[in-house]
Image 1 (spheres, rainbow, N blue to C red):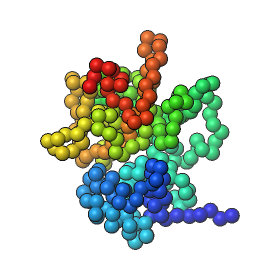
Image 2: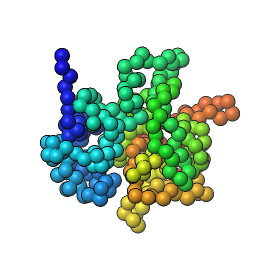
Image 3: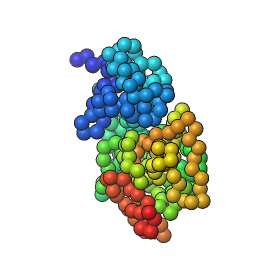
Length: 258
């Protein structure tokens, strides 16, 4: 039996169809790209490009394809491989080892989840999340398009503490007021912050919860890529957990914070 091969443009359509319960239209993807100010193009121009790419007129060049991969939360390399109908999401191993190898042993009452690395809660942006090591977590945290990161630094303190294990749900349009994982354009570095709407700038803004910490510089711009849906904290030998599908807000983690 011969395996089916796909062009990069056809893979864009495959990835769109697996976004959310109903999939994304070309317009949905164009809107997400324009919202991220990808290549400085507006939604209409992205809509035209996507339609052409998916028809292989032309094959998408590397730079636009990287922006499309980021908007869809898919590993860039997956678009370049002719095989593979199921998109490879960021935080999953490029070679698919966790899907072909036997499941790692987990203690009773635990399930393995993708541990994507450390997420910086600081004035600076941190390295891209590239780890794919499995970590054992409570089953209630598990779900499609989720991964785990460990908090470093204190820009989200006291809502998040250094060392907390945080569970993130892939989401390009998280609600304002939730704690989000944001990714900077260009180098794809990440940070965790509170997402607010700036009425003066008419734009979303990343806000530290700790008033002593300055927000990170935007650089070439950024986009939210996930909302916080779970926290596991061990303090003084006791473990506490928080879980909220719609997205955790500071008040959920510390009642006296708005």
